[in-house]
Image 1 (cartoon, rainbow, N blue to C red):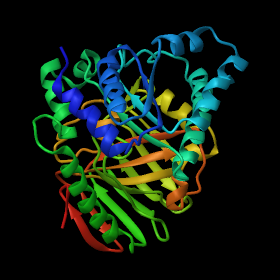
Image 2: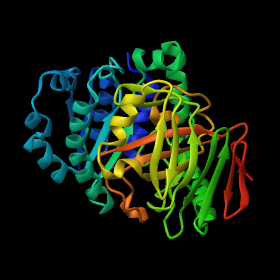
Image 3: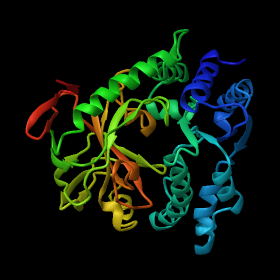
Image 4: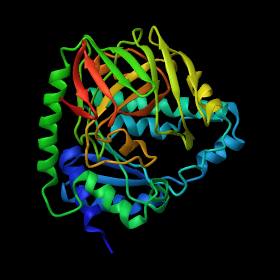
Length: 367
C-alpha cells in the first residue's frame, strides 16, 4: 500500500525542489530500502511530463571493492556514469540503506582512495548545477536501519522524517518551503556584511573570517528536509578550538568526542574518544581536508534531536556545523578536497555567536 506521505514528498521534490519541466530527463538513484519513494518520484515525474528512470544500487558492492579491489580498481569511474552526469537534467539521490555501518570496519587508507574517486563525479555534477544546467535533490525514505540509528521505532521515525519535510499531513508543503526560503534569505542578508564570526560554547571558541563570502540558503532545493544558512569561510583565517558533543558520522563510521584546534585556517590538533585513527586518516586525505569548506547555522526547529544521520542532524534548530574539505566555489570558497565532512556543534543551551564582536545568536536562536 502506498504511503500518502511518500507520494506528497515525491510531488514536493519534483515540483518544488527540481521544478521539473516536460521533456526533461530525471534519474532517481536508490538502494533497495528507498524503492517505495523512487516509485512515487517516477510517478510524479510522469505527471510532470518528464522522462524518468530509476537506478537501483546493489548494496554491498562498495564493501566488496574495499575488501578485494586493487589500486587501479579504486580509481575506476564507469564511463556511462560520466556521460550521464553530462547529459541528464536532474537527479534525485535517496539515501536509504539496509546497513548504515557496512563500511564501519573498512581500512581507512582504502576507504580514502574510494572517496577520492567518488568525489570526481560529485565535482562534475556540482559544476553543472552551479551553471544552472542540472538540478539535484537528496532525500531519505524511512527504513528500519535509520530508525534504529535514531533510537526510534519505524513508525516514530516515519513521523519524524515526514514532519521535518512538512508532508506529514495534508497542508501545503510548497507554501511552507517558500516561506522558509524568505525567512532564510533574511538571515543570510543579516550575515552578509559580517567580517568575522566567533562561536562560543562548551569546549568551543572558534573564529572564522567570512568577509567577502556570499551566504546561501538551504531551503529545500538540494535537500529535503532542509533549513540552514551557510557560507565558505576564508581558508587561511580560522583560529581556535571547537568541540562536538554529537558524534560525527561518515562513510559508515561513528567518531565520537571530536575536538579540533585550528591555526591559520588549518587543523593542527585533532582528538576523539572513539575513532581517532579514522579521524586522522580522513584529515590526511589531501591538502584541503584540514581546512574548512563550510560554516552554517541549523534552523529547522522541527528537527529537535540527533539521529546519527547528517541529512537531518546538520539542520537541527539551534546548532551550527562546520565542514572540513571542499568549499562552495559559487560562494567564493577556494578550498579543494575530495572530502566534505559535516560536523554538528550543539549550541542550544550554552552557545553564543558573535558577528564582529556583536552578539547575534544565543542559546540556539538569533537575537
